[in-house]
Image (cartoon, rainbow, N blue to C red; front, side):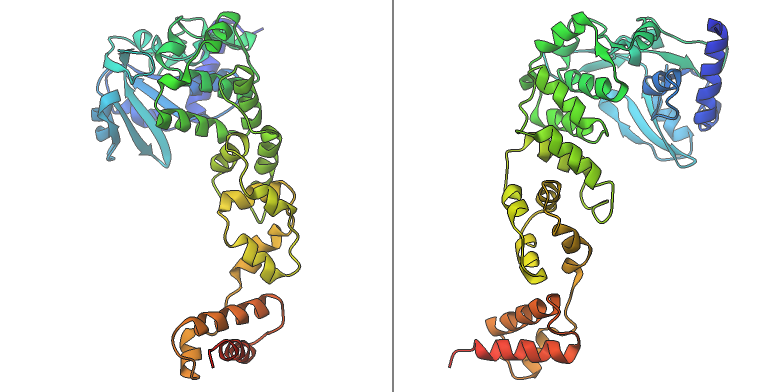
Length: 375
């Protein structure tokens, strides 16, 4: 079994290998600099590269500017975002946080040490840090390494969910992603959480982060089991289907995964069930049905079994006429509704394979337009 010192040396070496951008950041400051949070946690778990969050006991914005880029700064929270060699790095000034009331945004102040900064975090497994430079070390004032070994999520203090109720949603996200359990005291505190003290924007932003995860269905099941959200009937199964659907053609990239998963688990049932139960007799009928729907509704309908939406997405919706309204007007059709009717008739015929070239399109459009003109 490796010694603690050799394990920490391996942790530091692993972080430097996964994040070569660390050298550039370290060279730009003389202030104490640390890798914190998820990158440390995931390296200890052997999960490879994670988002890189750095804390500097100094000025994060000034450090970002010194790296030769225009950092995206958030003055309230003393943070900055900078890109180094194609990799995005989050920089934060070490800080403390206090909450004027439950669910409010925190009041922040500079911290004198990384240990103080770690004390404001959500769970012990996210409250570890590794210094960049100097002797290899793991800064772990809250026992995160032990909880990591035990597969436990534990809050740092009894007011954690009261101060920031969105931590309850994060608990579901981490528990589902990592396969962790909640420590008993944390579970008790979580069940008392009131998400209503948080603004709707913040609540939905955190739910959307959960929905973006590959393990989102499990995460939402956990939230529902804790009594924090109410799921649509069959919502988690539908969310699993949605995730699988958006991973393959022709649906890959059709909508943001998080938007579709959120709709599947939390939104009331819309028109997707009726759409899924429909079986259009022709491509033109399918286009008429699907063309009026928003993309998320189409994804949900397909996840419910509407296989005819595959050719709609991959073929039918891209069908276009070679003619346009100017061609009909040039042929004697007056401007007005007759032009639209003629073009619509030609498009239906093209979708259904009745016309196959420009001349046939024009003939079909003229016939429809003239037949519908008032006498």
